[in-house]
Length: 165
Ligand SMILES: *[C@@H]1O[C@H](CO)[C@@H](O)[C@H](O)[C@H]1NC(C)=O
Ligand SMILES: *[C@@H]1O[C@H](CO)[C@@H](O)[C@H](O)[C@H]1NC(C)=O
Image 1 (cartoon, helix red, strand yellow):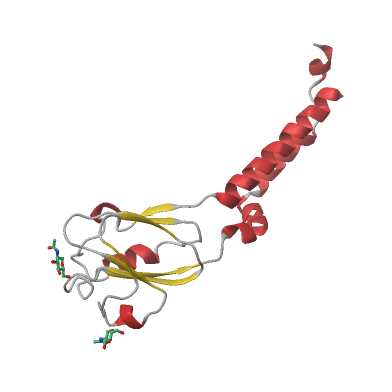
Image 2 (tube, rainbow, N blue to C red):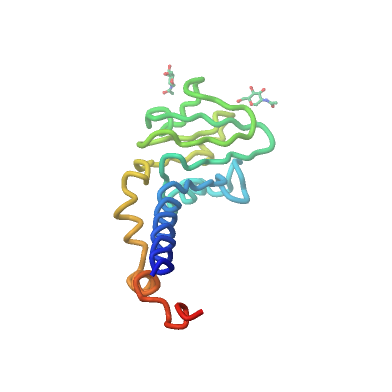
């Protein structure tokens, strides 16, 4: 029976580990994928890129570029909407990785020349940290067949020869 208890504990630890991995994993995005952070051919390129993703606190956005670009990050749409490139907000003048620290709207624009007008801009709406939503989310991801397999593994007694060995 000692082995059985031990197996149960391993099973429980595995459940706990899956739970923790699911709860803390942040996603690293490369903005624009292979285009990087550049003036796009298509004005909606970055908007389209962002619209296919769901962003959470602690996710990171890697801005990679060559040439003359900046990133300005705002929490208000005012300067973003009409591409007002006055020197406001935060500017970075080299490639960098931005870690999303708070929920809510984030607006990203390049402030160089008319790059913003030409589509070098996008906004995201960041959701609260997944950690708080993890209990329901994580269990939602575990499909019923997977759970029942797990239950079988954890709760079925080991085969008889296990004890005879
Ligand atoms: C851009 O923003 C600056 C700073 O707030 C403001 O003075 C200026 O009038 C704005 N320009 C336009 C075109 O909205
Ligand atoms: C980059 O563009 C800005 C205009 O937004 C200009 O003032 C600056 O001189 C440019 N820098 C380089 C290295 O071309």
